Length: 374
Image (tube, rainbow, N blue to C red):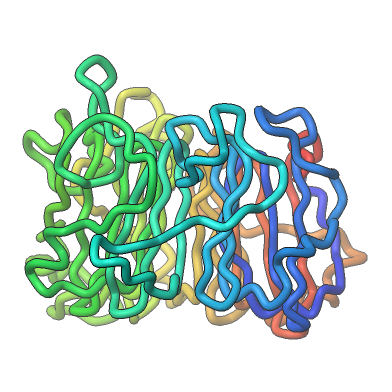
């Protein structure tokens, strides 16, 4: 059973903010934060509190234990600094409760404006003007395998660094999503790239990539070869959105179809109960979720939580699956007092056992485990 809470927030921006933290920006450009007060670096409150430094925030993101936002092209971060994922030398090993600016600077001294950000369990990423990708945090070790930085080396990247192969090849990045130890990238040509630990097939490239590890980004060529679309038969899918959970990945096409791949131990791929009999089951290549498209449903937005997914259709229906509660897309049933209020949902977000939905009228709804503090 789900608990749903409505808050009027006049929100225009909502980004996936995983696990122990939650934040969003309102139309008045005020930033709010709340979350688990017993986390590694505790949040300030379980109820929304204004972030003074976040006035006019343009984009925001949350990872398991750290958060970040951008104001006038300047990146700020706070939370746990494990593996240097805050990208700041002044943060120390314990991290910061208060947001502080992050220096994003090229070798020639140029400081580009940050356009978007993504945070994972152990690393961080940002896209600056001109579609340049930067990453920092855990890049891997000989003992524990690759990280998700895609910098071509192991160790820890203590501050934001350009991913030079994209720059040298003239590839401009439009989106980035971070999982626990892997990263997905969508370039402006619609091509998908991945890097990091490939266990459980999270990189979507099959073969050795599904059991090994990658220190550099490589293209997920499946999307340039498949014609399995139901909504656009015979055509290659045009991917317009990516997201990543702890150990799985997902992509949505311009026709509103979803592909998923990676681990399925919690039913997060939505492939039904039968495959749950094999706890080691995973998809090493992108898999088209066929059930809803075959019934005529078109997805408007989706989000990957820790071990579940939530999605909304163009008709406004919300579906959720995973977390060992449901194993295939299941429509969210609302308490009767909210039936008339939840209209015009256009954006969703997900965390560890909870989800959010944002309406066009600026109402934010949440449901899931109250114990999370989010």
